[in-house]
Image (tube, rainbow over all chains, first blue to last red; front, side, top):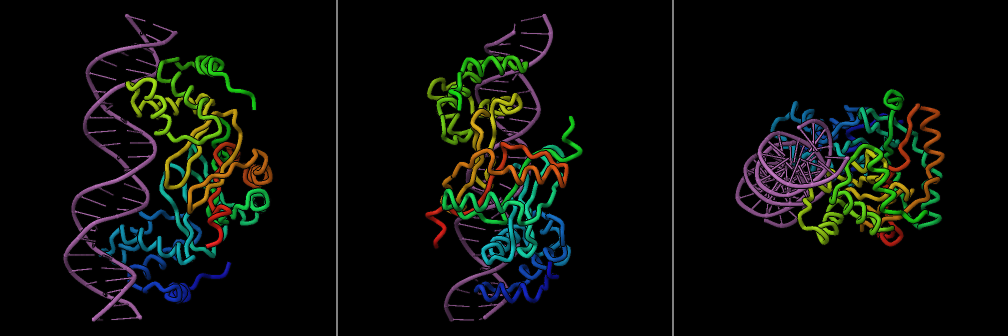
Length: 143
Length: 143
DNA sequence: CTTGATGCAAATGGTTTGCATGTTT
DNA sequence: AAACATGCAAACCATTTGCATCAAG
């Protein structure tokens, strides 16, 4: 994984036609900062507000939306709980324990078979970022 | 797919220790009736209330919960929109278009590779019912 | 200066819950 | 009778939206 460079990301954002604002800078920085974690919008809001309490949570949501449309950020939706976000560079999928909430990361190619099958049989172009699997993790699988 | 028999389902439910009530009978009937569709809790509520307007939506939710725990019903959670339910007999997974909401069904074995990999590498037991893939369907993939 | 971005507060929508009452076993 | 299920209304929580203001280009 290439080390994510904040300035480069901001540049890409500008190129997409979006304006570069303080809020967006901070959200992006928080995302870079989060590294391998899976922050929710609220988590990011907290981090951002640590630097600038002015930034409202709804702005974080709107910003994440823009970033997603610009292709910089990926949203992983988990059933029931809150969605999590990470930089698009960070290609992986998720398996999440229905019982304890632990998440496992899957290499990007794990779904290759599913994806090609979807395209071949149904013309369906799977978004390689939005995959989520439910189930039970090692620790919870026994009971 | 074996034709789902309402009475058999009710029997299984009773065997699980749950009581058989009018509401549950109706919800199950609605589910059987829905066949290959993917009704939401609200859809089911409507169908049920067509027979018996007394039944409250919250009861439908609670009933679906019981049915899920009893293993009779499977809930497929879609990001953003409402969850859909179907009988557990009806083994398949979903791909759903992020743009138009169209759903595609995937044979149960499509995820075999992913599932075995999860178990082998992470000890993660994937629930073969709860898989959902996002992306764009044939019609929406172009724009 | 023009358009897009933000703060705020209030709405939304799916789902859950507390409690008193009714029903199944 | 005892345990469980239901109706109802109200709570919940993540997310979205209307609108007036503000800042980036």
